[in-house]
Image (cartoon, rainbow, N blue to C red; front, side, top):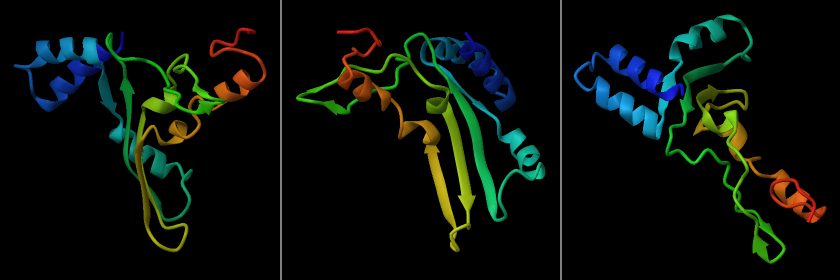
Length: 139
């Protein structure tokens, strides 16, 4: 698992060596978030962002042993709500904050997993309607 290593790295970079063992155990059980803010100047310098757009924060969260690892689904299907998602997504773990003035005024998109939260589990109602269960098996 990556989370204990990320938790150890975070403790070392924060100078919190006294709590390093506890943070590693916490990372193993609950997960940890890797701060990727050091990559923001590289992305900005590459010229891939539109004019007036800046990245404020960048990170990725890794799950732990007790993390659910699912993309929850609460979209009603007929009279019942279908079951939970069948797995997590890399988009659910991206921590991103972007500020842009492309609309003529500054707007900040500040949401963890912003690119995947809107669409998570969206294919399950379609599969259910076509006669499949949440795992893709024919009913």
